[in-house]
Length: 149
Image (cartoon, rainbow, N blue to C red):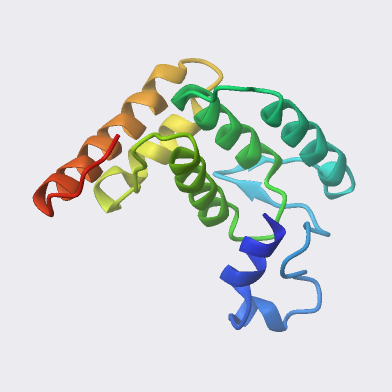
């Protein structure tokens, strides 16, 4: 994850800022959608716990991967770029678990953000958004006659 963050943020205007910490966990507080996130001093431990719990799951389902994503976003381990890193991880994990991936496009972006906030209350909303995005991705695969699982 740190390497993904480094690749995404290297060479950007943020990378020249001393406090930004490209490729490393955040040093300063941040927020997502107006909500507080994990304090910077707790990030390393929270990430270890999240990864330990996630890797303990043998056969990961769509819901397991989305749940991991939600928890990653709540920790918000990097100063900026968490959403991009998180969505890349989802894409990679879907492929690693033989699940057709998805991309959150502009049409679904606001639904995705709103439903990410609701995950703890009604996780079916975010699942529905991700499955819709997956259906859109399948349409592209079908158009180009690309076989998928």
